[in-house]
Length: 180
Length: 387
Image (cartoon, rainbow over all chains, first blue to last red; front, side, top):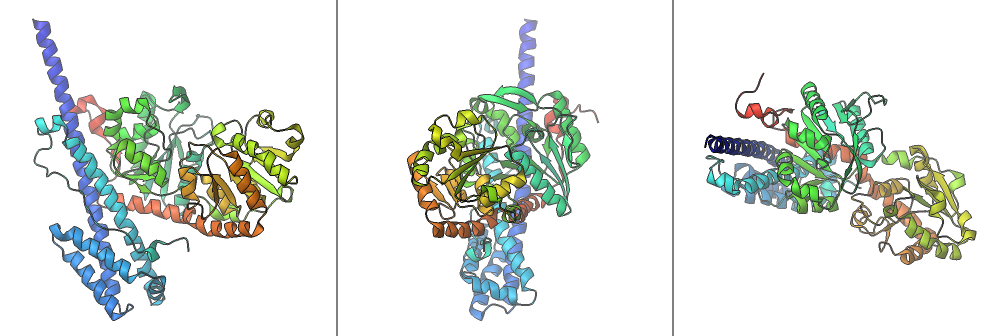
């Protein structure tokens, strides 16, 4: 009788340890998503700032300036629900404006342009990186949260179900072509 | 930035991953970063100042061959000490799925962790059994890097998630500026790799050789690499054997000179390659490349634009393509030209900057690396951890 009781107690404790360990895992994943999201936000903001700077610099022709300014401005001001669309539109605008290498050369030739060009190239390369890291964290958290033990024991608490950030982040070819 | 790099394989044994880590560490040190590499090494081997020994690796049978791995209580303690003393901004683990230092570090650390997946192993039985444990450790990795699109695909299939592709780096100028050796010039074909490892493909090349020599008797094959030389030429008719020259193990300098000297570099590997650094080195040295059409090779050669491809294990096709190239100097010059432009993306200046971008992306808005107290002690589960 006592032996049975002890065994039940041992099993309960082990289950408790396991659940607490899982909750710790989940907590760490949520923290990772937060950090990844902050990094993604920073990169997106950086990209929009450089684009806006370029648009108002007078280096580009007026039509290109307006297109780029409009898209960069919209991306910076977008509310959360429209963020993905606005950022995708900025990617498209950047691709349209820097479709050919000459445009990039013109930017580089302007005073201080070399630096801006470098910043833009860096920003368009880091946005897809940050997005991939963010979505990877989201996928890992979702996989764990869908698990029975997490749902039954409500281990996720009140944390919102994580959402991937989906956008068109294809950089302009003239900016990433580093072989030339 | 304070960077900690974890190497899973013995520092004493030369290998692709070790060289990659060495070059990467030295590149970052040149840029003024603080770098520490944790690697398995015998205590009496001389190590560069930036390498910290994690103790001796133990040879154990794993995954069908004998691997030298680090695990157990002592290694785990060394990993924790290294993490505590280093106070790194970011740690970069190589090959985190091998049951060695990489996995131990993953288990013991928290904070920004970057991991590079080098090989594209088919999923092993052990990995399926340990999936839950592996997943819990791999979840901590904030950024995954795959060395090729092919490696990324296997990673996604086996472990889920995603990775950015950053190729392995090569010091392009080291190869481009090497002096050709006149002894190795004049209608020569080059091959570098272990002679006795069939997947490096020397047997395929040996099978193709009689046809090449029948059309071009003046051609020589130069083979650099360890292994039994007699066994390698056994399949060859006796009168053709002198056309094969074995150079044995050669130094990095000689490797560069060899690649600068040959008229054609052949990579007949039959499988198990996830990148193909030797192709990049050959292209850097300006050698026209003919390689088997493995996924990884095709990608490095830009789908055949920067080098010729032949169907894997098809000795006849290899001979045909080799003869075509050897008899056509214009085509070889064109490949040389295209290759040397193409390899710029594999130069350390580009690859290193990309890896640094990854570090900066994951460290933005995150705390520094620390030893993870939550997973390591059972006591801490109950709030009984000793300070």
